[in-house]
Length: 497
Image 1 (cartoon, rainbow, N blue to C red):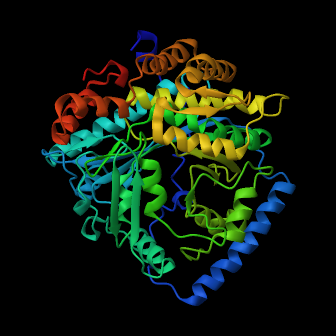
Image 2: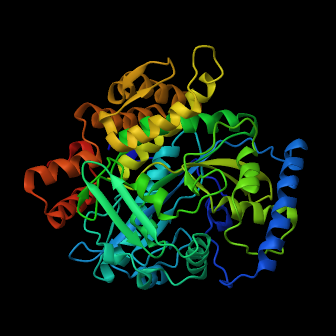
Image 3: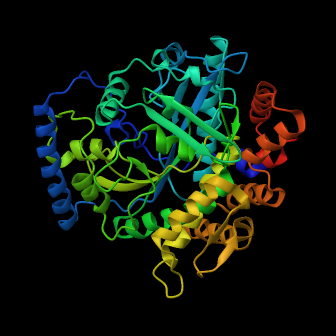
């Protein structure tokens, strides 16, 4: 990496805790109750209704007045043994680390790494990279002590269906409750995973552990309240090209499926539907017109899944935020409070997979943050219109075909996605990062990583497919080589096959 970036300090870090420290926003708070009565559901629904009304009042009274523009991340990683199979040992590693930035995930072989929020200016991107590298180094050291390693990849090529069993679920109340309530909502019917891609995959599960097979790099974006709606809609529009540029999940259970198989996998892993036949994992209902549109929709259309009752003041919106945490939109609005008790909205962009390298993930964040910032200003201009329905169609085309996809863009015309990224979206991202005040050397560096990936057409997904085509279907060898290259720190477009 260029010297000016390598020597950057955390000068723009803010003193707020990690975005996810109040984990009801992400359905992450530990609970002491896993069995619920009808009265629990009734009481939760009443509190949810009240808090949905309170949110509308808070917006009318302009309680959401935090002017910050900031970013952060969540990264889900795999613990693997010497054979590159999942290692269900997250608890001793978490105990050894004892860090609020590293927390359990659904399975015993996954952990989640979190970053502290950064003001989105100056050295923010390099600060994110430095903190992530430091946390990863600590995790790798702890994993090494337990004869394992930490791997960042969307879907693990060596994962076996038998690994996704209840014995490998992290022994925490919230995961057990989630499993029980999802199955109850499905009337105990098994979950059927059926993905048709380059090859076909059909499996049946009797629990929610399929969710553990999909790991992501989630970028958070907090904006001033007056620009949240436009940024949220821009985040939806940019999802397809962003996903195509970052695809890293082609294989599941030995099958070559989508460029980003994680998308259909997660959508089918927690399948309960509302009256509108929408699953709880989805692309959304449409562009929003008001800050609370998604929360109003949640209240009206998604049944309560986890009726946990809190004693916090109603204006802390605990029940509303928990309910929102059980609806997994690929672009999800979140509400949280800063250390002064001031509420804010932010966007959780969930489309990006984990990996291939730290540099790749921060470059993906730079592409997202910059392009979204510019696109948010364009969406209200004449001649720059893209419907929600077309944005959704674009998204699934990108997930299926990666950089080979074609999509409809702002001009209403069809484009090859690789050319669109190179010719229009990269300059859009550079403009957005410039206007945010991101240091010029960082803009140049991280966007050059994206450019190198596009010009070589070597995403993480393409590297995996090319390796298997050249060396045969030896997923152990491929995953071993992937891990070695990931640990080298090189971006994926520089990886040899």
